[in-house]
Image (tube, rainbow over all chains, first blue to last red):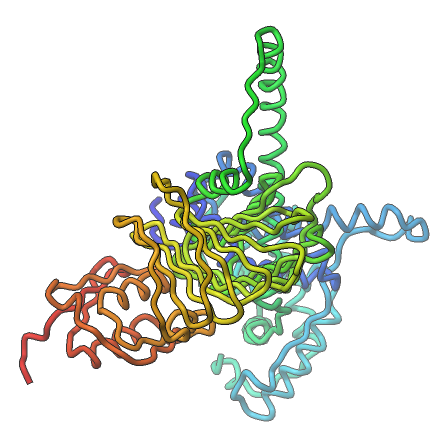
Length: 195
Length: 379
């Protein structure tokens, strides 16, 4: 497979030791990584620390990195793992929470329907309703929806990131959509075509 | 790792989903496009990058040290076995000059090199470095701070500003130094109690904090400037065949460091004077000038009274890190006046130059190279 997109080019230059490429890589992805990290934590410094460690690792291990990696996916996955480790470490010190599950949950979403979309009043209401419902879904289902619809990852990637099987991943999305449908009253069949 | 194969895939297992579920999926997709993301400011982004760079250079330093400690130990043994009697005395000017020669040449980013060889990259076009707490604390771009050891042996810091960048340095004694593009300044991490000394390559504007008892020395390849507290500009680019000082306020004492048979020459100058040391003639000469013309670069504009075109283009190519080629050499000495705003980008700048000089400019395939030539269509 040949990839000629510029990101891949930066990645290859980085692996072969080009210091400019390292800086380019940071410029390109730091903001994306920060936004992604802040989905899981509210601690800005923790997120920055994890990004810092991620780039230190990248620099240290660059000779061993896969040349055909999907760069964005690889970085997101690595950052998520770092956030989880940091979270586990800090929750191990909190004895009051022994019994609770110690996985790092994704924060609730804040959508900006108002500013960004030109839609009918009725559609807007529906979307607002849907937004509220999404925030009521179980953490992992919300996370999958986020990775699928916001980060545009495919099922293989989501499964790898969340350490679940691809069929489980599909089932999660299916269940989430079923639940969302159950909570919503849709108007005419015409609306279906509008998206 | 797998590449994405099927990005357009709408929703999972379509046959299992009802129309309504599909709609829910499409809506969710639409909704997720409007998700509000947390952002961090460019300052925070730069500060984090600086930290990354610092950590990496510290780690390098650590492994480097391990090797050299072993190497040094064996060399020391050899020396002890032999007769080690050679003690080199070098004055600090010479030491600093050697540091300057050692500092990285032509980095893309402004770099601050500390005494322990840590290298901190400053990403801004106009960066700032401020020493606080007697030199122990360094604030970079007002967004991140770095600690350094100042006790013990005298150590040197180097600030390297590549072409296309500028930097403002505030030293622990309150002296401010504006470094122009393509410059290097070496200074001790903490000043001596008897004298303050720095070494410059390139161009800098100094605003020296007055101290009656602790004179401030600026060394360059060919000239030494000694002051108690004044404002002046020093230009000592290695690709220029002269070194010059322009005094804005107060008084300074100059010593040309020529290795001539007659030794060095001392001279005091007054405000509005430009002292030029010409390398070829090995002579120090003075002239009265419009100070603005030589110091305005620090405020972001270029005042030209009657400057030869080559001089103007040289300044611009340093400031913007571009090559500007003058196709007709006979135009090199033609003089122009005016004020150029250095906040403009290079294209606007060349546009302005073209209009004034009646020349045309062309950008070459190599995007950092421009050619100025006589317009073929006569008006």
